[in-house]
Image 1: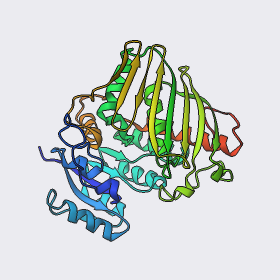
Image 2 (image 1 turned 135 degrees about the vertical axis):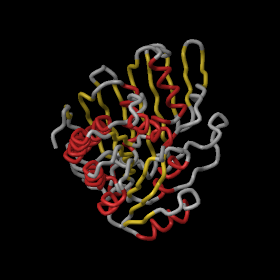
Image 3 (image 1 turned 30 degrees about the vertical axis):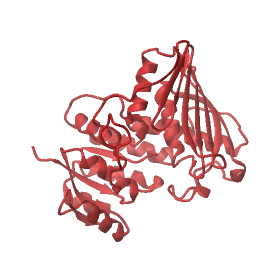
Image 4 (image 1 turned 60 degrees about the vertical axis):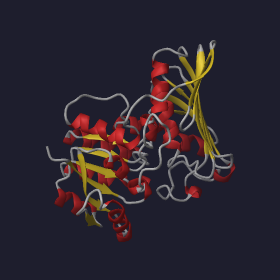
Length: 349
C-alpha cells in the first residue's frame, strides 16, 4: 500500500526539528519531538507538502528533510495546498490562535486525520467549530499534548489505574520560568492533570502573577511567542470525580515542569523523563514503558490505527480532551481577572 500523504502547515521548530540523541537506552532513540521527526520514523507516511506564510521556513524545511522526502512541494496558502495535494493526514503547527480555520478547512478538504498542536484553540467558539467539523466529516483529530506519549508518563498512568497508590485525591502541577505561559505551555500541565484525574472540571479559582494583574478575562496572546502576552497564573480546581488539583504556573520562579499525584496509599512524582513512586514499601523509580515508539511518532501511529479501523487507543488526546483543556484555561483567566472569583463549569465566554 502506498504511504499516507502528509501535509504540514507551519514550519517552525516544532514542525521541522530533527530527532535528538537518545535520552534512554530502552527507546534506542529520543522520543521524536517535532512532527517531521515523528513522520520520519513512521514508514506508512510520506510528507509531500509543507506550507508557511514565510517562504524561508518552507525552504529550510525542504533543505533539512529532502533526503527523506525528495520532491516536497512548498506553499504559502494552506487552502491551495489542501486543494492540490489530496492529503490523508495534516499537521497543524501554527500559532496557538490560528488552528481553527486550518483544521476546519482540512476537514472540508477530505483529510482523514489531523494532528493539531496544543492548545486546540484559544476560545471555546473556535474549539466548538473544530469539533463540529470533525463530527460532520467523520475524520480523526489528535491534539499534541505530548506527555501522553512519553514512556515514563504512560507507566505512571498504568500504575495509577492499577491501584498502586490507591484512589487519587490530589494532583499538584508545577510550571515555572519565563515560558510558564498559561495557554502556550500551561496547556500541557492542565491536560496532564486531566489525564490522571479521570473526571470533568466542576469549579475553579485562580490568581494572576503580579505582572499580569491587569491582563483581563480573555486570551490576549500573540499565539505563543512573547511571554508578556500569555499570563503566569496559579489556580485551584475541583473535578467531579472528587480529585482536587493545584496548578502553579508562575513565570517569576525557577524553571520547572513537574506533576505529583497523591493517592490514599502513596504518591507518584513525574518530571519530563522520570517517574518516582512512594508507598509504605518505600521509594522506587518507575521504569519507562517498554516501547520502540514514543513522542510524536506514537501519536501519529495512533491516528493511523484509527484511520485503519483498529480501534480507539488509550493515550490519544482527542478533540473533546482538547476542548476540556481550553475550557479550564478560559475559566482560569476569567477567575483571575475577577480577583479569584469562583468559576463553575460549563464556562460561558
